[in-house]
Length: 136
Image 1 (cartoon, rainbow, N blue to C red):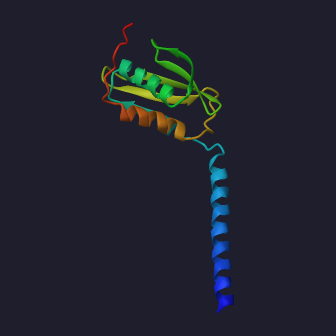
Image 2: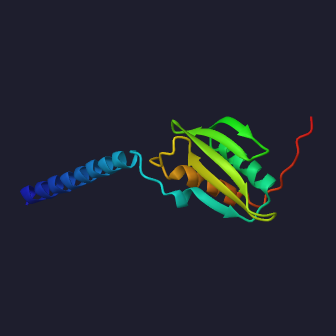
Image 3: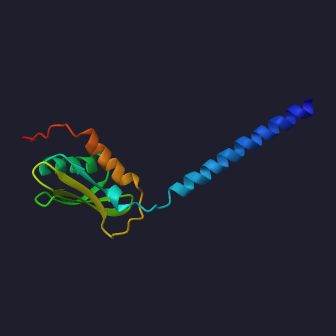
């Protein structure tokens, strides 16, 4: 009886250890660059150009991405995320609708698909926020 219990504990221990090893191997595989589709990097918002531009700028800042350069007239923001540079641009469709597009500066779409998802998620969450001017 003691041998059976010991064998069961040993089998259970090996099962748990093998599960941990498989989980760590899968975690290492997800850190490698993955191809991100172009369609996942562009979204249409029912917002005017100025508000979407400032929301995109706020998203880049709050997510901790380094803002390298910005041009408010044309709606361009160059950010650095996870060691790559990206162009985040707001493009007007008409008075009510604006596209927000994230594209890598080197045109290589092998990067973490969570980068555009985080930016779009931030804009979605703060969609109804008011933009206020800071007065000094």
